[in-house]
Length: 201
Ligand code: IMP
Image 1 (cartoon, rainbow, N blue to C red):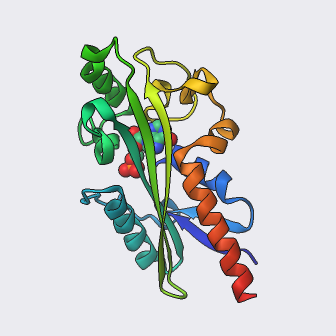
Image 2: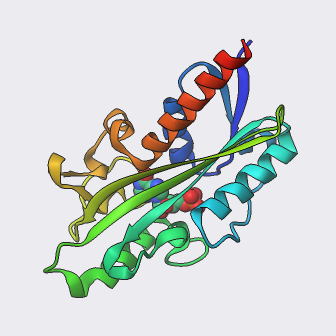
């Protein structure tokens, strides 16, 4: 029987990316399967928020739990929106509203190269051996003030990857999952889980 793993998120796009990055060795569920409401992200860093989300969901389910806290850092905005990426334009902001706010903030820099990166911090908690591990991934790019592409979520249409001459919003999920901040962190998670299962066999 496959071991269960719970993804502590209410974001279906994020869950879908993580699901395909975990592969088929696990029975993957999300916190919605347990009717666990959205967890308040009161932390000031990605690490703190990922620890809060994974802690609450693992405690409520007693199962192996994974939480990703992620966001976009724009150098010209001193790292903002950062941990506030999901609620940049307000507590219940949509992706479109957040993108609009970011474009407005960056209008004055329209003639500059706007360097930015996505960050992902993933916390994995295993209640069986009481272990807690943290994995990081980042993805460098720049912001384009001309949104392109309908794939992905969040700031993907504004995140331009020079080498590919395309935005993250123009990549399909398989392409994004080869390069993204979340993919880099998730590769570390799956390597860790593989090694751990070999150690206990
Ligand atoms: P979290 O669910 O609190 O971790 O918020 C993550 C937020 O960061 C999302 O709502 C997006 O605004 C942004 N974000 C994180 N990862 C991505 C991505 O892969 N593409 C686009 N936006 C992302």
